[in-house]
Image 1 (cartoon, rainbow, N blue to C red):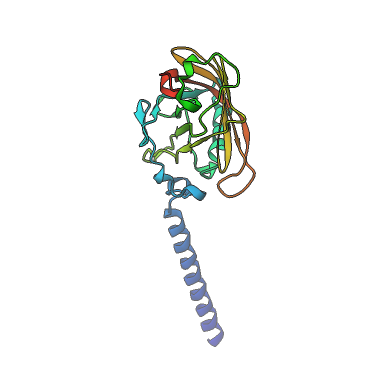
Image 2 (image 1 turned 90 degrees about the vertical axis):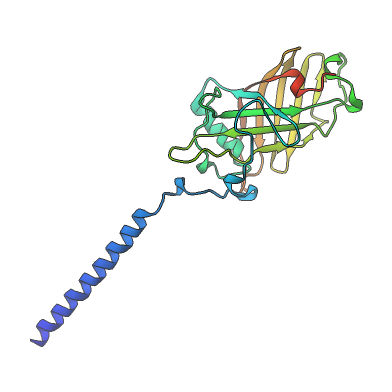
Length: 232
């Protein structure tokens, strides 16, 4: 009888252990997946702190108009490169889908303020090696889509300095290199009285967690000339 009692006690203990294991599994199954929880991405803080304007035509606190767009004909490749670009401020695994043509209220939107040293209007430049204002600015706003989440803009990328040694404007051609602590972007193209258009390159030299980042040609940009350059 003693042995039978020991067996019964052992079986009872095993049942209690099994019940506890089932409880742990149930609790774990009820928790949200990592993709649905608020994200904290490196140096720029919580994703929800990305206080960028939600649509084009908006302005930043400093008055920059956000009505330019970066586009690509290869949307999957565009999204991979865009995550490399955003890696300077947020873990790319938490960046959702971004339209490569600005549809469905998602996309890569830009605005800027570029001027010449001394205040000369850029549209009058017709000589090579014009001197540019190093305090020229570029604002890049990425709005993504993540299923089953409230829409929140990603932390904006705000370049407050222009590399005047690598930048130039000659005639209607411009090469502009903006930089921050984690990398740089290069906008290379031409402009007329209506639009500044060209290629948008980036080099994320350091990611949000201090790793070596990626680089590439994100796509083609288009932005109204006289809302990006100082024309008068």
